[in-house]
Length: 601
Image 1: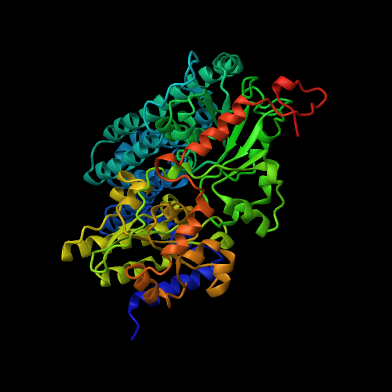
Image 2 (image 1 turned 90 degrees about the vertical axis):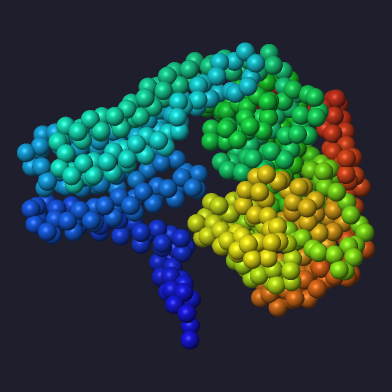
């Protein structure tokens, strides 16, 4: 007989198919409608049944709506979303429900109740204005010597929304105990102070931002950066830009990071002391011309974003494609890369990958620079004794933005981890950072972490997951603490080659021979098919004889170049220095645009 849980999952999947939405979206709709029913029915019942026992049913529904809304807000905070101007309608309806409770309990306090309710609603409605002011009052430059900095907010803007939610919760409690209406008005006034303070800050930040925008070009000309790192994405700066920043800094040359979205600034300031600048206004020459000063010679790119075109139009720069990892994913052989002057690849495999997929890039555009990030990965080409205990790193990638870019095995993760535990293996679990942007994949990751914690208590094996594997350790640390790897199609597999240790790859998009043909890296990996039919055989090799050891060592130089260990960064540093110290490439000018301010391709 089937258990209730699979039936529920199937039912949810059926609703997902019917609605044409993801399961997480269907769950969101169900919860939001449950909130709507609770808050509306609760308010109506309280207003129409004051003085009767049914009133308390309405009060219970109002409290339930507060709990549901609190859960929704807490969930979004966990996803890293700002709550400023979010859930406005829900919070206003909750304030009206509180007013209904108060009017039912203390009809003599109607004036105080409506004054407090009006003030609370006004504060909620002001949030979009605050958000717009804050978006306009973003920094122009951070860490640029001698340049005025827009102050940071006095507190997290999310607190504006949370304070008004707290006002509603306290107000409901005061109403139920029959407190005087002026008490509620005082609470609302105090809770609205957060919105007032943030409005004052946003206006002041906007003034400073507008004044400083006019002087950014002069400040950059005085600073004289030699190269820029351009980042146009909203997310992922920590691992995409962050993996290259230590090597940029080793060049001992002045550089800047140009980021298009203020939301990335806090992460970037934690990663580098270099100036971080943001484009602030549009002109006839584009929105970046005031940042591209005469001293700049190179622009680096680490992410496949269509807004890269804004920077590529500056013809006198040498535009270098770096990417943020080396793998057989489609992002590593995009036809867009032909637009760059130089395409940096780790090894000859990076060159061949484009040709195999029909992407035409001139040979002189390529530069084989190795993989600097493998310098801290310890190499162990000698196999472990058969009886030695094993530690396996399971590092699934994320599902990508489209179905055809979904290489993630996380959906199979619990079964893979259970198979490892059954063999007495110690597990390190490190999912892709984007895993926690989706509630469904977050739930799967949490389930795997719970399984590991339970096994740790039962067996004493020191599994590593959660913060320990994802924050306290970085990827090289995880590699150095494991004896083997299970991963997907990602740069994790490429970098792991430096360790000399065995690894397995999970086939998601293709199966069997088609997978090995499409993903060359799989030819030196033990392949776990998507139906897990080859999982036992793959684990036998991974934890035992490792028959692919010699093939992996040969493939390592083809994929990563010849420099491993402490020497890994040297080819990259030497190539960048050669370009910086060499002559500027000859470019054609476009009539009407001064060469010093950038020209279009």
